[in-house]
Each structure stands twice: as C-alpha cells, then as structure tokens.
Image: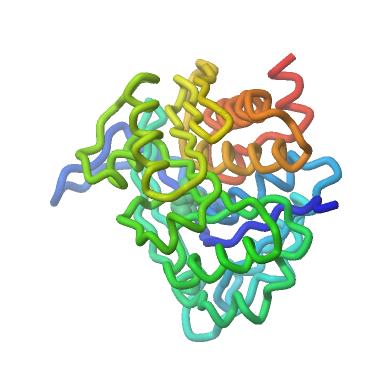
Length: 308
Ligand code: RIB
C-alpha cells in the first residue's frame, strides 16, 4: 500500500509587510508589521500536508542555501511532521526569499528571488528518487527549474504516484510536462495564462470550459481553483463544481498551497473527489483568515471543526 505524499518544489523565507495599498512605480509608501514567515510554494504544500495528515508520511524534495534561513525553513517543516532528508543544501546560492506586500483586503503582491531553488537539477531528482517510493500522491509547482520538475514528474510516475501540478507561477508548459500530469490545479488566472488568454475572474461555467480545454492539452484531470467561490473539477470520471466558504480575508498568501496539500492528504486517504475538494476548500478558507504562508495553515482538528 502506498501512503506517502512527496512534494517537490521551492522553500522560501517570506519577508511580509502589511500596507494600506500597493505602491505605484517610483513611489515610497509606509508599511507596518514586518514579519519573516516560512514560505515557498513547495514547502507550503508540504507543511499543509504534514499538518493535515493522520497516517500519511510527507516528504519534501528541494534545495536551500547554507544559511540560517535554511535551518529555519527545515525546522518549520519538521515541526509539521515533514521528512526533510531530501532537502539538499547548496553553497553557491542563498536560500530563496519572497518579498510580500499584503493589502488591507487580504490581497497580496509577491516577488520571489529563487536563490537555491533555482539550483534543483534532474541529477538531484535521479539521485534522490527513493523520495517517490510508496508515494500515492506527488505534488509539484513551478518555482524550481522546469527540467527538474519534468524529471521529478517522471520519477513520481515511475514509482506509481498520482502526479499533481500546481502551475504557479504560471508559464506556458511543454507537452512533455502536461502529459505527465494526472491532476492540474491552476487558479483562474493561471488557467487563463496556460490557455494563452488575458487573466480574468470567472465563474463555474467559464471554469468548466477552461478545465475541458486544459485537459485537451494533456493532463488527465483538471481542478480550476476559484478562491472563495470554490473549485471546478473535470476528469475522466465526470465533472463537478464544489462551493467554497466565505470568510473574512486577512491574507490570501498560500491559500492555493494549502488547498493542494489538503487535497493530496484527502486523496491519499482514499476520500471521494467531492469530499476531498470540500476538505481542501475548508483548509484554504481557514488559511485566508490569518497572516502569512506556513503560519496560516490549519491543523487537522481545525479543519474538521470548521467542516462540522
Ligand atoms: O504561494 C505563496 C508563496 O509564494 C509564498 O510563501 C512565497 O514564498 C511564494 O513562493
């Protein structure tokens, strides 16, 4: 039986400042409440899976620098129950960082300096491929080099894992990558970018259409994440819209990552897709009510209480 979730991706230290509004080009504005919070799309997904898992082992594959941020990021994951033995230290680059401005209404702007995340190679994946053994679900994003993502997708498939790609930050993807994906999970703007359209807010009807168009590009199934509206699933077993939860937003950072980590845990436990999507929507909704990436990710008990 396969019971692990393996996450391949980025680890960043997030530098978070709260602002009334985002500065215009050339403008200096005053912010408040500076915090350093563990983040990175890969590490956030691993942290979410670790906090929400019951009997599922969670592993992280990635690269950090040789600096205090690296220790802090690995400690945050280890505290969430994540195995960090496949996080490699590199001396040539610092640990990745993200500069994040959070506006009053909870929206954010993020600039990532990838540092060591940019050093993850197909050779790293090959030499660490035991990380995918017995993984039922393998999670990926796009903050590490695409060649490494492609190699890791292959290694995960070869080990029999279901591959889940969060195409963030969005970029056009080659067929080799898209056809190695079992479940693609863009948000609405990422879905638009993958389809070569200008990003826009959409409802369930447009999300359904986009999910079908994305499946035609290679992934077996697609989930379009629609924030507090919920999400739309299209796969070989059918289609469904699952309503989200409306909450008072404090910071949307890592909501999508929390969704993916929660989804992986639910699917690994054998939950039906509708129940898994509801569980993921709930975990993401709770994360939005708190500031920061890993600092905002709920525990299993919190999600169960929310759903009850
Ligand atoms: O998805 C949120 C994450 O994006 C942040 O934690 C930041 O590190 C960037 O990678």
